[in-house]
Length: 366
Image (cartoon, rainbow, N blue to C red; front, side):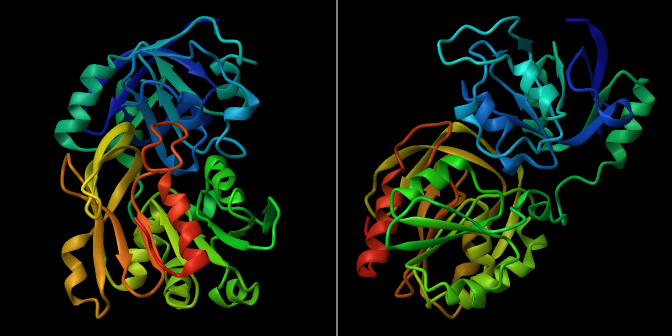
C-alpha cells in the first residue's frame, strides 16, 4: 500500500498528522462532523450503519481491520459516513469469516479514511468541547481548517432523505404484517422483525394513510441519521398513527415519536456512540449494557404538558438522558438505544418480544 501523508484538522484548529487510506475524497478533502465510537469490535457494522450519514467516525479502539470484512456483516446496502479515523489499520486480516480487507470495503464504497491519528488526544478534545466539524486530506493546514469551518454539521439537515429506501420492499413471511419505516434501518433490525412476521419496509416519506391501508399488525420506526427536527414530515405521519396501531421505535424512531407526541429534543455535546452504555429499565429496576449511536435525545422534562400519559421507561446512567418512553394506553413505546445490537451486547433484545406481545395482546410488557 502506497503511503499518502495527510492531516486531520478540526474546526477549533487542532491538527493531527497521519496517513491517508481508503478512497480518495472528492477534491482531495473529506469533511464531516467528527464523533468517536468506543466499541471494541464491529467496525464493519458501524461503518455501514446509515445513522452515521454526515459524520466522520473516529474509533477509540486502536487496532482496526484485524479480522477483515465479509458480506454477512453489512448493516445496509453500503456506507453513508463521510470518513473514518483510526489509530492503526491492520496490515492483514486474520479470521475464518474474513472475505476481504477493510481497505477494500472503504475503496468499494468511496469512503476516505486516515490512519496513524492519536485517537486518544482526539477523543479527549471531542469529549471536552463536543462533536465538531473536521476535515482531512493532503492539502495545506489552512485549506483543511477552512473546509472544516465551512462544514455545516448535522443540525437542521434532513439526512434521512439521503439514506432511506427509494421503494418499499418485503422481507420474511407469515400472516402478520409489520410496516417498518426506513429512516436508515439496519439489516439486523430487519432480521429481528422478520422473526415476528412479514416485514414491509417503506420509505421515510410514506404517509400514514398508506401505512394504515396495508392493515398492519404493527408499525416500526427505525434508527437513522441526523436531527429529528429536520424530518418533520415523518413526525407528522407518526402523529397520525398513534392510537391506530401498535408502534415500536428505536433511536431516531424514538426521537420522532417524541416529537409526534409534542415533546422536545436536544443535541447532546458529543452523543452516545459505542457498545458499553449502562441503561436502567425503570420498570424492572434492572441495568442493561447497551449499544448506542445518536447525537440527539428526547427531552423528558417536556413530557408534563403533552396532554397524554407519557412515561419515561429507561434512563442512561452516564448522563441521565431519556432512553425510553411509553404512551400509556396507546399501544406505543420506544427506546433510544439499539436492542438489536449489531454490534454490541444483547441485554435489550427482549424489547422485540415486547413488541410481539404488544401486537398480540395490545399490552406493553416488561
